[in-house]
Image (cartoon, rainbow, N blue to C red; front, side, top):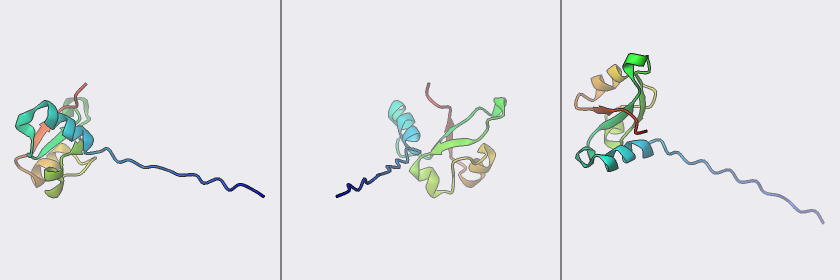
Length: 82
């Protein structure tokens, strides 16, 4: 008899998690369109993650901040918590 080994792979997408952390730290952000963004001064001006309300407006991970603000004018951009 041979034993068959099953390998399972778990993929967990925690992309929106970081936007949720910012909303937890800043209660005034809850339910609003927020994006955690890189530093445009250091040439990292992209969206790292966005909240679900921002995603509904078309804001996506990897998008330039200026493009995200065109799609969502009331977007709140914040830097990642360290």
